Amino acid sequence: MRSVIPPRSGTAFTLQKGQTLTVIDPEGEQVSDLVVFNHKDIREVISSGRSLDYASKLYLTTHDLIYSNRSNVMLRIVEDTVGRHDFLLTPCSRDTFRIIYDDPEPHRGCFGNLEEALKPYGVAADQIPVAFNCFMNVVFQPTGVFTVEAPLSKAGDHITFLAEMDLIVGLTACSALQSNNYSFKPIEFETHLS
Image 1 (tube, helix red, strand yellow):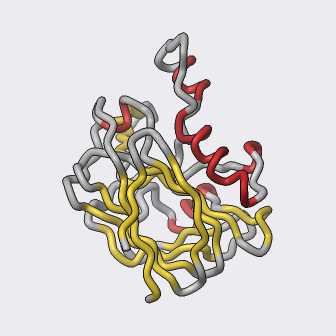
Image 2 (image 1 turned 30 degrees about the vertical axis):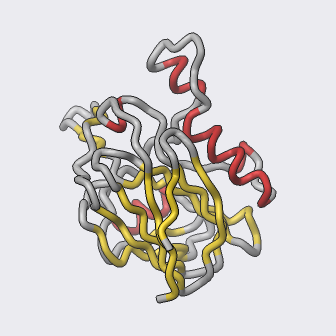
């Protein structure tokens, strides 16, 4: 069954070991922030630093592993129709909009949406890590300067993960203008037994 995350919102749910999660961009050019926690111990959480270090590359795609802060595999990417995602930038937040966009009445962003969605699972705001930003297109220059460009995802593109442990998942339809080519759209997802 396919579920829909409305624009600029988020959700949380459990995913059992052996299940797959497919994140779908139904309209194209829409980012989705993904965070995961060990269902048995929420102190074990997705780690961009360890995942990128062990893969020795910035852009993870099909066959790559996503590790926890304890160096355990949490997710395996089993299918990816885009091949460009970000795993460096933090979930957008009120502070993001205040500092980057100079917004006097900032939206709570993906961070606020994740905070609310994960609260029933006992996850506090300070436990929310850097997300795996599905479809986000961060481009790096040789100088180290980076820019956030329009996602490369087209309508119907997706990325599928296999759960390697029982997980709590937080997932959003990103709220940042620049990340989504200045248009807010929904994200869809499906879970299946593999």
